[in-house]
Length: 160
Image (cartoon, rainbow, N blue to C red):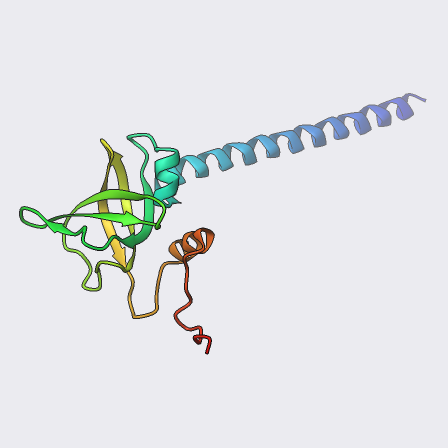
């Protein structure tokens, strides 16, 4: 009988140990997930259209990507390599300022995506990306233009 009680005691101890190991594994997983999220927080940049920026202005410290079409007649060259222009999704436009060398294919009326942050109503870009061939437009820009009903597929054959 004493052996039977001792066996039950060991069985309960094994079950308790198993529960502790599982709980510890969940805690370790939660900590690891939190650390990965914290480490990646600076590497995640959300994409916004000019309409989204106008509707819900981001905070001054928030780094994000903005994309759309370079508004016709808005490109102004400043001192040195500073360039200002407006990016639009045809519903709203946002002024952009960039200091640096623009991509060769950057042009008015063409798609672009910029990385940076808002400062006093102007998007100050640290990086500007432009299309890389005649038909390319960033996926985010295409999706935003489709949502606005303004996207025309350049590969589509015109209706006769």
